[in-house]
Length: 309
Image 1 (cartoon, rainbow, N blue to C red):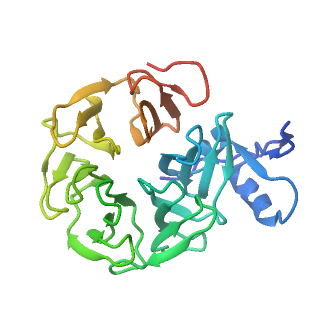
Image 2 (cartoon, rainbow, N blue to C red):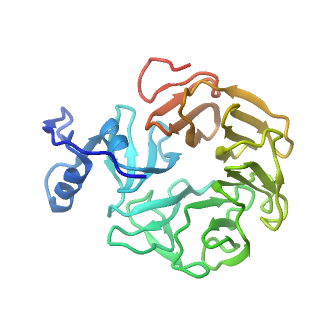
């Protein structure tokens, strides 16, 4: 997918004493790289979303009113006022982005360095400010476009690179499990069983009960599925094209459609606020960041009072 065209525009001061740049992201990052002192740089989220690719979304466990957005140009922290701050020390392409289910400041990622190549498996212990390489993975350095940590056992992590890989020691060592499901788009480990796994694919939503060794259909509607997401309290979400955003409680498949009002767009990433099942966030294929305060029944643009049906 090509990056959108960028146009030059003016910057303006922010009342907080920091600098809010409305310039294209490529220009902003050049400025950021040159800034060794002075006020922190901040970015309107609309400019960020229109100028980069989003690869992951999570609630900041250290401060649930904020979001973490993994992008093609680094990891950003998004505040309720709609301003995004570059959190990572580099503008690497963070893919497979995951937050540890019980340690709020521990993050995992993979992807590509800004200089080219693959990152392998990375871990941060300070909320994304600094990163350490844990492993190259199998056949690596890997580039896990899909990665998921088991909420049932956080030592178990799954990733997709040249097939499905698994680590059972927190990302330090990896083994190849099997070929990944055809057309895989997203991966989600269960909150109830470390060997249970879900895969959103172009052919539908699949599940495995043996750590990815074999797969079966998880929904009778076998159409392209753009996301799969599990929560710590055992909810499973998926978006099935033509049906909508669906939800069930693990480990069963008693599905209900909770929203189908995204127009021609489809959700790509979903984030939930731990301890608050009604608070959800979604990033869509048309570059919108939406939030719901009623469990996904209705949606509004992030940080506004308007609603989207």
